[in-house]
Length: 235
Image 1 (cartoon, helix red, strand yellow):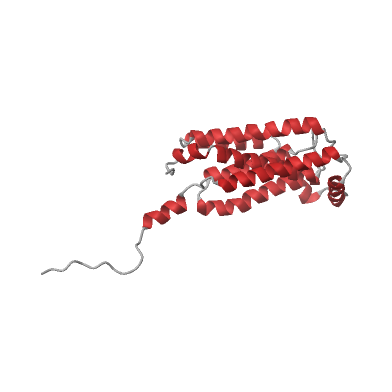
Image 2: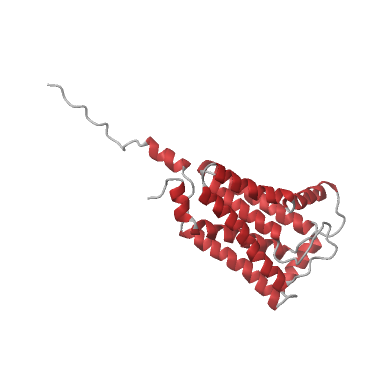
């Protein structure tokens, strides 16, 4: 009589499970809420500290950083700083947000596109009252065109929010790890350029980045259910 084939001992092989895990979008979780809240609190705390003690410990740190960037500005570093500050603060920054939302809409992910647009709007909603209330003067003799109050930095806020959203909405696991390095470095360069050109104080750019990243994380968490259904990974 023929005998049935016996299964090979060992763990079952499930190729699809690994592929789905590797290619799945990042799932919003409770950690996103905690990280977003911590970042928003840090940005707001810097503003409160400056409002209560304009010449306190934060200003002393800002003065020390500004002193380290004083002196002759020229050469390659200055050119890079001007290109970064003028680029992201001008049309390039707007184009980046439009490109992100437009691409998400084009690939039929309307809730992701709405999340990106909401984060862009929310970051500005956070910035404008803070600028109006604190009305912090900018450093003396800025080397680039500036307008309005110094705290918090709108460029840093937008760069950090955009970096977070590209990482969580667009990229999959393999590309995301590299993006955190690239996006974080780009945000840090934007922050450096603003202080190098004396357009912002150090605390302005740090608080701006915290507010932007925090708002992006909280909105990503708020859209969690819609985003997961959109890509068919809920359940």
